[in-house]
Length: 160
Image 1 (cartoon, rainbow, N blue to C red):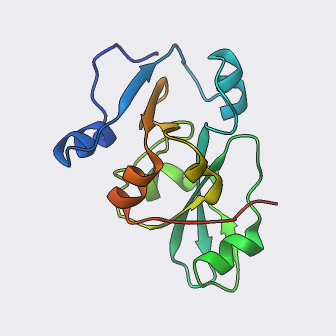
Image 2 (spheres, rainbow, N blue to C red; image 1 turned 60 degrees about the vertical axis):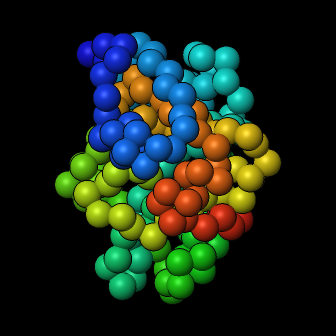
């Protein structure tokens, strides 16, 4: 069911506590819809709309990668960016147990553990980017520099 306006997600509570500025957008969404369809539905730019992917390295460590919704993660570049020989995307069935978030509501803010995070370098081209708010039907608009500082992320080229 779509979230009621005014509901606070864990990600929003963390942003509020750290006094990090952000804007929230609530939209109707009852089940997983990929980021491009959401961007189309809300007339948003693919370039500014970032999806959050979780991968596991050869070392068995988990990593978070944020990239524009219409792009694909280059696993070799991603592995290099986190100092791994290789990474593979986490299986969908494991997303909630690893991150605490469901597919489609996964955000780099407030996962069960703060994993090493890499955001695609294109984020720095914008005053703000759009990320999941931590639940279906919730988006956060946030300055990339603020996001990078908050979650101790780095920016690199991680796409094809």
